[in-house]
Length: 148
Image 1: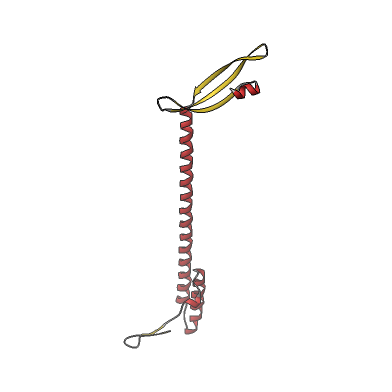
Image 2 (image 1 turned 45 degrees about the vertical axis):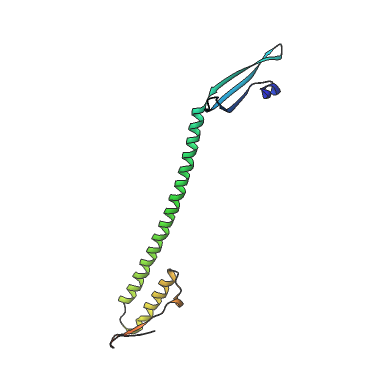
């Protein structure tokens, strides 16, 4: 009412109230001056219970927040899945390239092509070639001899 007095016009507002029996509720109110001879003689107050609307707004807000959380989680899961698929595709391609070079070996000098494919494959997988080694297994001996 103070605001209606100050601006000398109608004012609308929402207010949360606590009933004597403990229930909380919301009201949308309109307060307007009634003028006589250009002066405010009295006020009129119209109040409408909007508790159900406020509860619906709160549920909608909670649902929106929950949905946002679910979308964020699902997006993260999908990004992980995409990364894993890309990693698997790279692994398969590396294996196919190395296998192809091995099947194409006709002479002992062709080992260079296999090693090149192996080096490229390891680099594609993020493994530096210096961390790897090649062992030669001499299985003409019993037990077989492994040489670096």
